[in-house]
Amino acid sequence: MSGGVALIQGASRGLGLQFCKFLVQSSKCSQVIATCREPQSADALQELKLLHPDLLTVERLDVSSQLAIQQCAQQVALTFGSLDLLINSSAMLHPSGRGETSLREVSAEGLSLALSTNTIGPLLMAKYFAPLLLKGTGTFGAQSTDKSKQHSAILINMSAKVGSITDNGLGGWYSYRMSKAALNMATKNLSIELKRGSKKVICVSLHPGTVDTDLSRPYHKNVPKEKLFSQELSVNYLMKIIDGLSIEQTGKFFSWNGGEIPW
Image (cartoon, rainbow, N blue to C red):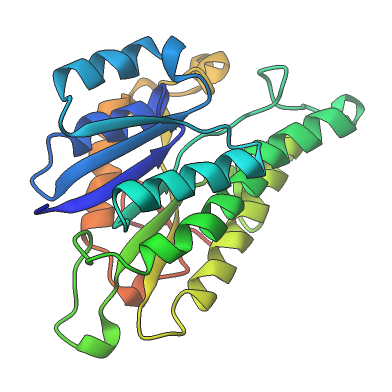
């Protein structure tokens, strides 16, 4: 195959689905692997599959199940042998659909479910798919002419600015903030480990801006119109960042506009 292989985790809707739409049109991509919990009920994803049957593969993957992640990685290894881009896109604000506004609303269940989807799942994705990323061809990103600085693949964790401890001036949203802050730490750890060998994987966290998705919809009334992005616009911004990544940027946290966000 000419072009790279990309896998989008959490592709049934929102940004994950939009990443798939972008990548099936990209000259850099020869195959897009879209994963979600229930492919048979992911109508928009199945429609995209019908439009691009040779470019898009849909796989079942429950990001809260370690066994499901392991089995999906085994299947991708058998079919494709390597990966050039992995985007962890699925996210949960809170099981109730709204972030906690005070300590009174914090619960063990809410914290556990948010951490499972937003932090533990992406880290396990890295664990089982890292061997495939290390075999990548370096199709995505800005490849260095210096062989010692060349990368095999890129791993993207979709984070959020509210996961920045430095930037937190409002409080609240305990589950979501904590899970994204922990995800950022996982990204930093991964960037160190996956840079050590001769084969290197760029690992970064990205903030997509405030995007018109199911996750953010309860809070749209508080967002100025010019700061509420369509999914298409956000992904266009994010792919521009991805296309410009080199090994020097690994381990960083970027906003949709390319600016670096403090941890």
